Length: 333
Image (cartoon, rainbow, N blue to C red):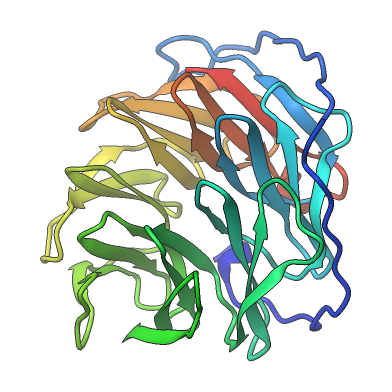
């Protein structure tokens, strides 16, 4: 389960926010890497956006900046221009156990992953004087998804929700967890349940109990959704699996395999991209499935979170937890 399990920490009282504007650009080069035996086209090491980071986990991107959080009892939410930066902008210091985020056009949302003392926070992407507290007394929140103005998050034993304009947390549906990831497509909410080794779902209109979409999983990890399918990683088996985007029981399709430590994934109109944490690679797979994924980046130090824009794939290297050795990377699709 790694860092997506319940994080026990101290409630942090002092936080700071700074402006994201005028993040300096940094030059970066592309270094050739040795071909992998499973490569269709040889990978490269990628272009560094930011370096000397400690456990960069979650990752989001918009038209201007890339955003991430460093994981730990004194982690931070940070930002950097898409071109790269020498010194990332710190949006919020001393944020405990942030391992996932959600984003609107103007705002970032995240949670403090602490048992019984967890909290949901937000900050304007252009800078804030202090993170806004949307909800307190949460039990180790771990995953977030935004659907219009409704924010969903995974608490230890429930999927929660609230309207971000005036957040009164309500239990969307109870389900013993913990959960690893959550996505929403406007019709349904889907999540991977690490505790029950399953993929579950519920219509956005609500349900009395979640539907088990896929059962008998081993280590279901991060998710992605497009108009037709939901996808998730099975990091114990090194696979990416899929089911139709519906709240019905399904026999999963193996989309890709051979991704040692498959962790996070992202989808665009034609492809899936996945980080292979143990293998140190980032792979691309044609949708709906591929026989042999293409390794687009190799020689990475624990590739973890991943995000896309129209032309570029971005990912974090968590360096398997080593202090000041993580990075945020990018590569043209």
